[in-house]
Length: 235
Ligand SMILES: Nc1ncnc2c1ncn2[C@@H]1O[C@H](COP(=O)(O)OP(=O)(O)OP(=O)(O)O)[C@@H](O)[C@H]1O
Ligand SMILES: [Mg+2]
Image (tube, rainbow, N blue to C red; front, side):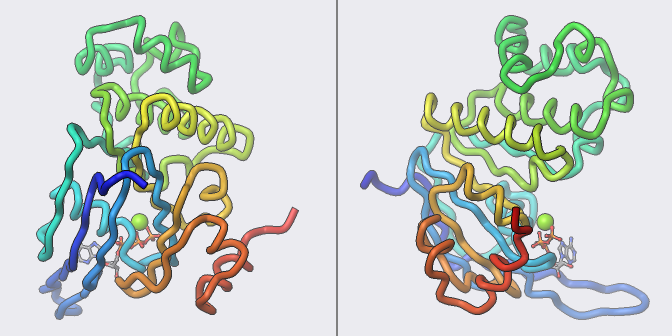
């Protein structure tokens, strides 16, 4: 097995709330340690509020944390849950993507890969797109700087089932072609099956179980993991 590409040691994040109605501390992430190999996709799953997003935000340096982070790659990029908030509202999609990489062919190829029509979508502003179209634009944007690590926080939650499959397939191809590593944050355990190599299960800010896809799905050790698995709709 190849050496670690990213190492996270004893990562902790504490939020201090000084609100009028409530005050105190929230220990959102407690002593989380894990490593990631090049080309590996690690799924982070767990109930709402378990600290998944906070782990991703700490790695990106968006929240203060304690602990050690070592990253041996070149560039990170992120895909977030709320695409409207992370796109420029007044610029056309084409303009804001070409501002990042002035290579129209490359942008067009990515549009094709994610099943979007460049000619029509490129001209529009973010508010003129559907949620699913916007989400795919965010995915495309996050790939433009040729990252070797992507923090993906619920990147496909707004897509319908067919599109979800399409996007997962495209991401998997990119992972296989470019050896892209990814932290894939989701509360939907089913989607991890199509993209993740390993899964880390979080509860109340801690890792309670970590294993390969096979281990987690066929012999989960924790009751909590079992509950998450049972919550997957049966087809
Ligand atoms: N900026 C913040 N200030 C204060 N508390 C926060 C902040 N961000 C997150 N928290 C708290 O930290 C805990 C973990 O939140 P986090 O967003 O990481 O959960 P999550 O696992 O991503 O949940 P979800 O599945 O709903 O996205 C929660 O209790 C949340 O309320
Ligand atoms: Mg979250």
